[in-house]
Length: 62
Image (tube, one colour):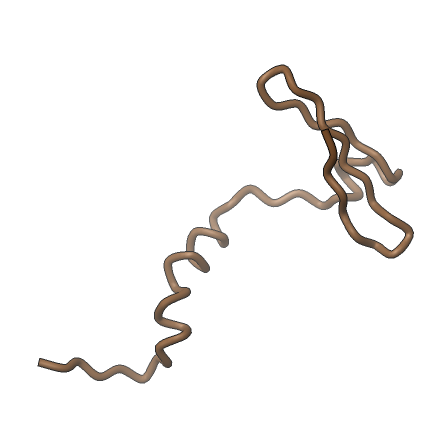
């Protein structure tokens, strides 16, 4: 039997991802960089650099 709902299919498909995203830890990039432009992030002994560009974009490099 076909179920009907008021939620459009596109929104129905994204619901689990949206709910998961709402529960993620959230950090302001400026807090990570202490109001500068660079921050170092370490994962499993690998260091990465987070950079905020002049255009306000984020770049993560190894």
